[in-house]
Image (tube, rainbow, N blue to C red):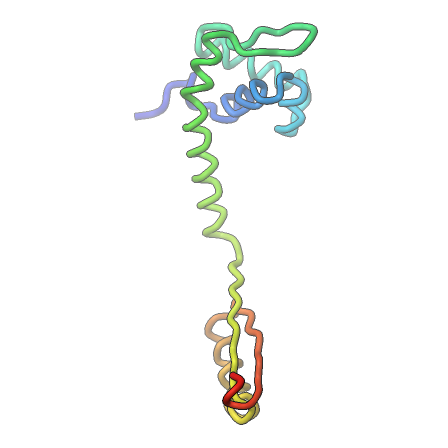
Length: 139
């Protein structure tokens, strides 16, 4: 089932939460990479979709109406979940870098480890090894 229009626009809902946190449409807009007029237009469109004023605008800043407070309290966990989803998807595409610490005796480090490291790099190129070599007692 498709989401109704008043809840489908998570960007505007996230903007509303930023207005509540920052106390200003302009500051919230800047935090979202948009101008104050663009942020105001998004909030007005959201208010039309939900059918009630969400903000009280004043010379000293902007606060949420009672209805806005309710919407914000219900929307906050949804936006956090959407942020978690975005992070998880980005993680799937991010280059992963792992580190492995290797300690080997001098003989193993000199004769065997070079081939092993080449094989490791071929099989798992995102692993970054660091090597400590010394006598067997130390390693």
